[in-house]
Amino acid sequence: MDIRGVPTGVAAQTPAAEDPDALYARRENLADARAAAAIWAKRLEASPRDFESAWKLTRARYWLGGHAPEQERKAILEAGIAAGRSAVALQPNRPEGHFWIAANMGALAEAYGLRQGLKYRGDIKTELLTVQRLDPGFQQGSADRALGRWYYKVPGLFGGSKEKSEEHLRRSLQVAPQSTASHFFLAETLLDGGRRADARAEFQRVLDAPLDPDWAPEDREWKALAARRLSEMK
Image (cartoon, rainbow, N blue to C red):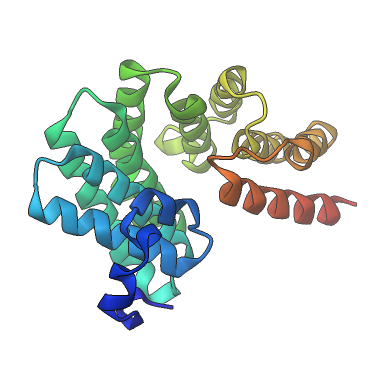
C-alpha cells in the first residue's frame, strides 16, 4: 500500500517507521520501501548536504524502480539518478553515489529499449569505472559485477564483449564467491556463448548459495530466476 494511505499519526507512533534503514531492510513489502525512500527524501530536502540520505535514496529508488507498478517505474528511476547525482556532488570520492547512478541508469537501459540503452551506456560505464578506481571491492565487487553485465548487454558494435563480461564477472566472484547476482549473470554470459553445461552449473550455484542477510530480498529473486532458467534448460 502507498504510504500516502497511512495516517501521519500512526506512522509517528511506530518507532520502526521512523528508521528508514529498518524499513528498507523490509523492502520486499513495497510500502516499507516507499516509506524509507520518503524519509530519506525528506531529510535530503531539509539538509541538502546529507550525503547518507542522498545515496540511500538513490539505492531505494533503484529497488522501487524494479518493483513499483509499471507506470511509475521510469519516473522513479530518473529520480534515482537525480538523487545519485546529489550524492556525487557532495562526496565525489565516495563510491556509493557513482554506483547507484549506474544502477538506476542500467535499469532504465534494460527496461526501456535500445534508445535508453544507447543514451546511458557511456555514462554507466564511466560511473562503474569510477567505483572501481575509488574502491575495487565496494559492495562485494559490485563494479565488476555490473561491468560484466554491461559488456554482456551492450552490442559488440558499441563496445560489448562476452569475453570481457566473463572476465569481470569472475573477478567479482573472487571478492564475493557466493554472490547470487554474479553467478546468475555469469550463467547467462556462458549460455549466450553456447557453454550450456557451464551455464547450468552457474545457475545451480545461485540455488546453492546461502542468503546474504543484507541482500536476502535480491538473493531470493535471483534464486527464483535461476530455478526457472534451469527448468527451461531441461
